[in-house]
Amino acid sequence: MTPLDPGTDDGKVAPGTLNAKLKRPPRSKKPSLSVIRAVFRATGGIVTSAADKMGVDDSTVNRWIREDPRVAELWQESRDRVVDLAESVLIKGLKNGNITCAIFVCKTIGHKRGWVENHHREVEAPARDMEAENRTLRNLWDNPQAREHINKALALSYRPAPRPASESEKVN
Image (cartoon, rainbow, N blue to C red):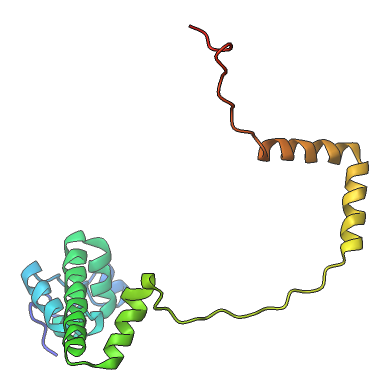
């Protein structure tokens, strides 16, 4: 494909440059933001398609998105337009009585109203050896250091709410 904005890059590598020594082509010149916007809109922000239209590798477009906030904003804007288009098709389907569209909307937007699939699975818990657990707890309680740690943990986890002061305790 022909690049939309080839710039001055003719694909030749100047002798003695780092690119010549590494035998790799020089970086492609980034097109103007208006060109990038038009390409992103035309491709729906699909990076590989946009790269093909601009005559660069998809890693180059990804780098532009990552390194230039303006390009990232244009890319996100194009992706948002795709979602807007999908939503408009969904709305048309709903208006035409498409049951699949209705179910999709109910399961996604209507989940707060209870329109969710039940993915609940019953799992049988393994049997517990209560006698062994009781022995472990008794052994811990018999150890003075362990008992001290347990009491500290209980004290930290239970802090009663302060009671309101009675009339006689109030200071003027």
